[in-house]
Length: 134
Image 1 (cartoon, rainbow, N blue to C red):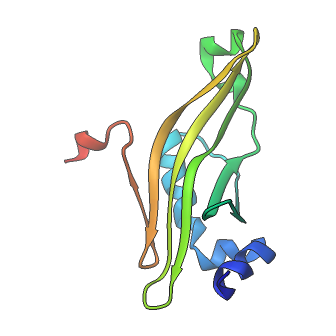
Image 2 (image 1 turned 135 degrees about the horizontal axis):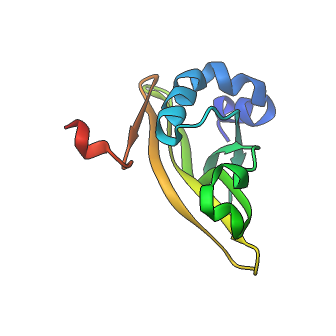
């Protein structure tokens, strides 16, 4: 494991500065129209390193009519990747997901947007309204 990645795993408090997550927080706020407190961490998976983003907030109360049938509703990461390339720095990709559970059992989720970190900047793609801005 590269020292730079291991440092983020061992010291999650370093993620905010190293990966400029203040900028990411703003993009997530735009994508969700919610003022969420996001938590970020890096972990080693079976075949790659993952970047995890999640809001601890349970959003059942903010889900309108769906609050009548959901027992859990959260914002989290569905898939992700984190790499460190010495010449280029950190590169991150992840999909932000709305995960939910029905009161009768069963759970599912849907993508909110994709996020990428490259060259010290976060970008957002594949989100509702993206094509309207073209």
